[in-house]
Image 1 (tube, helix red, strand yellow):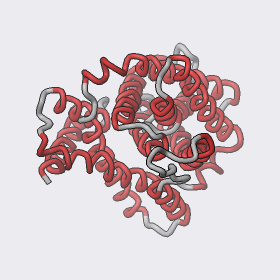
Image 2 (cartoon, one colour):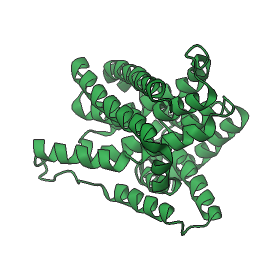
Image 3 (spheres, one colour):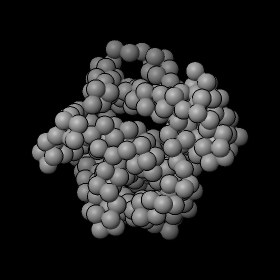
Image 4 (tube, one colour):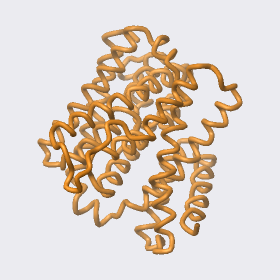
Length: 320
């Protein structure tokens, strides 16, 4: 309970920071507050159980509720060209980041988590893949820190690049939706250019729909490569909460839930995600990052450049 109360307080502060400085979304502030607490020595042992519950259980709930923001109809709205941009961006970023990780000497589990976070939807995707990646909590914390850092940079830098790159508002929205990691970061980036937000959200949420098949595919590949872990357990083909995410997509697509319920679920998802990221932030020790995060930082920056470049090329070539 003490840890959860501390997480709740920090979550409130994160939303307060966002209200005062709209460019800083709650997810970014939440990770920063968690990291600040642990590196200032404020993360006392009495808080550890609660922050652990937040970073694991609450994050899984947030992933499930994210499914209620999606619908199969969104893929139909994209059309073949939009779907091509989304699928090719995810595939090239995911594969390319893992190859770059191998070249940089980043551990396979950490590279897999970074690749998933950058190609799909940030911390939520990292959480979903963490069930099958076989890494430790440091790997998860580093991956979350990288997608938070680069997604926050995108909010500032991408709008500045719109005119030099020759993108009208609709094309800019497509580029943002196809390249920015977290849903909140996507909204914050696109909202800075009038006329870009709707396209960005549709493209972004279509990327999120690829989360479950990507996790399932990676899990099957890992099971074939190493049939059993040292404990004798094999990673699940599809973690239970990812199955819940798919069930939520089905419910959303059915039209059974009224708009007020969907709006409440979206608000709950944002709050739970921020709370979970406070917990994950407490795993970001500067000593650990100095010791193991240098190559991962290079990997994250290269992955960010890769996803932005591939998405831009797709938008320009297809005219989405």
